[in-house]
Length: 220
Image (tube, rainbow, N blue to C red):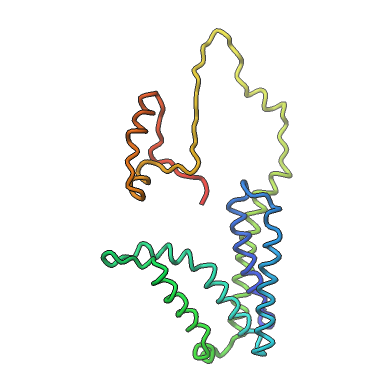
C-alpha cells in the first residue's frame, strides 16, 4: 500500500462505475466498454511518463490524481458556485471558476507544496485505501442491483392470480397515466424560465386530470 501507487488507476475507473450504478436500469453493461478500459490506460500512461521524467512514483501518481480530480470535479464545483452571488455577479461563471480552480491545483502541484511533504509514502497509502473503498462501494451498489436479476426468478403462473376477474356488466372508466419526459413542473418552469404554465394545467384539471404539483424524477 505504501510502495505501489495504483490509486490514480482506481480513481479513473470509479466515476464510470458510479455513473453506471445510479443508471443501471437504463444503461446496458456493454456501454461501459471501451471507456472503462481507456480511462485507466490513460491514467497509467500519464503516470508512467511522469515517473520516467521525475524518477519518483509517488509524485508522479499524485500529479495524475490531481489532474483527474481537477477535470472530473470542475463542473460540480461550477454548479455549486452558481449559488454564490455578489449583486448581479455570479461566482458560477467560467471566467471566475476556471482560473481560481486551476490556480488552486497548480499550487497543490508546485514544488513548494511537495517539498513540505515529508512522507509521500503515507499519502500514497491513504489515497490507495480511499480509492479502493470508493471502487468497492460502487461495485457493491452494482452487484446489489444485478445479482437479484439473475438469482430471483418469478413464476409467471403466480402472477395470473392477481389479475382482476373480468365482469362484462361493469363499465370501467378509461384511465390515462401520463408521464412527460423532460417536462418540468409548474414552479420549476416559473423559477428557471419565467414561464407561467398555469393555464395549461388548469385546462387539464377541468378535463378531470389530477396534476402532481411536487413531482420529482427518480434519477439524478
